Length: 197
Image (tube, rainbow, N blue to C red; front, side, top):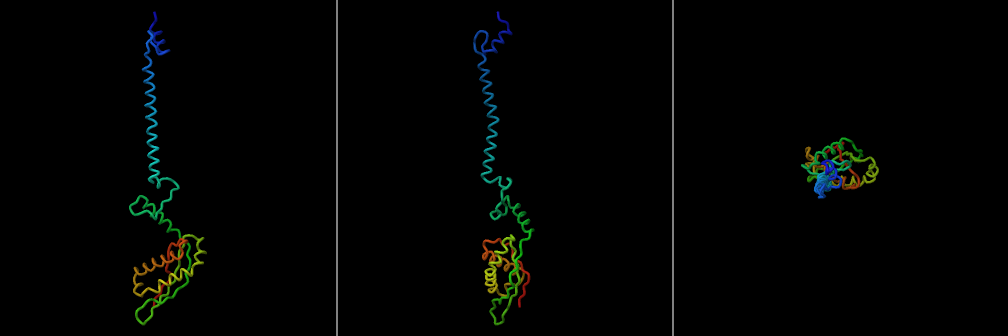
């Protein structure tokens, strides 16, 4: 006669009961199913996170977060996520002065319809982004002066009245200097002296 202890030992040893029937096969299947569930529960969330991260990266959602990514502020519009960052970047760039280059003094006669002539004397400086561009800018200075004089000779005395007239003239001069020097980064045109008579 086989004792209960020996019966359990035999059953555990080869998965068979004392009478020779297989009872351990279901337990082995349960253990294998548990391992598969465990692997799925661990691997599946990792795959989902990796897929979501890759999708966010390729769709550009991580551009402002990842180091080394440069925001293209020319493409950013008001209301975009990067708008505040671009405003801050612009303020920091404006706080660092560029290189100031003197433009030769100009005296031009203004466009008047009457017999009396009006003259404008103007002294300007051009602010460049980089000091390395100063020598190249001075080489094309005759082109810049030509662009300025062509524009200034078409002005009427009424065009220069008030702050809005001066602002328009400043914008036009800035556009012309940038057109004359497309490969040089020009930041601003600054009035040093202006006299009309």
